[in-house]
Length: 411
Image (cartoon, rainbow, N blue to C red):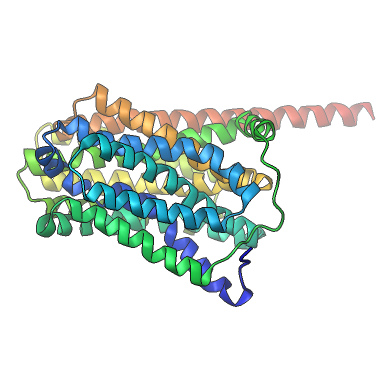
């Protein structure tokens, strides 16, 4: 077994943080290429958008089992094999124009991404505790926000100069480069491996999902991320086909979206000591108010600038909510190790995939007004869950206090 050397701990930590956004790169780098892929593959926009949904679904579902497997078989070698598999699938996509093969390879990418991301999140639970662990978990969504900033900007450039296949060549090279770095600098971090038992995993998942604040947290994460996903799925067609801008503009606008998410995440991290649910409630109220105001605004004014107002204000608030809730869910059951990481990641991604698919299928987003309507539905659901969770938590505390007062009176 290749154990992580103490001298490589700092480098390995940087590599772990750098690999957490790999999912975002896999999702966002070819966003500016969606119209070109649709034309080249002779497929409808919905058929090409399915590449995103397939990746999300397989990535989410895979995490539900990956956590238990990594607790049993370690973090290092599964991550190495996953990087290799991700790279190969990327090169296959780049070399084909068969949509069915692309679907299969996107599913493989989703599974491999699950192994990579869960193993790297578990890396931090293996090596750090207390405030140090809390610091790193709050960094996860900040680091993750790098992908929506860099990937679409790069993807727009690659699409304009080299075509849609170049996006997947980039993903393949990215994965293989990190495979080499991991082999050189990383190693196994798990202290003791647990036997892989489906019954044990099932019991742990039931215990976690039976806790309302955790389950509602997964739903809030899914809804907040779906705000970004419905934009990613609809913006290339709004910008390139309705507004008639080139793919580079789509990439630049997605970069602004990523910067807005990053800004919200950084603000959430800076306010980490403030009351948790009060922060989330304030952000959701602000989001819903802005969403309603912008729907009214874009009934009269609809152009690239009003679209960017949508993006900056609403996506920054989503980043704020997402950052706080992700750190909360990841540390809520840290005693379960990889299982908690897998369920958190898998749970919110499955929710995101379902919510974004439902919105895109039920609302034909062919204008900013309908994009705003999709946003409003998701944001209202987030606000409802926050209020409901806080109400239940307050009721539980009140009940516990009453029981304590009765016990003291009896004594």
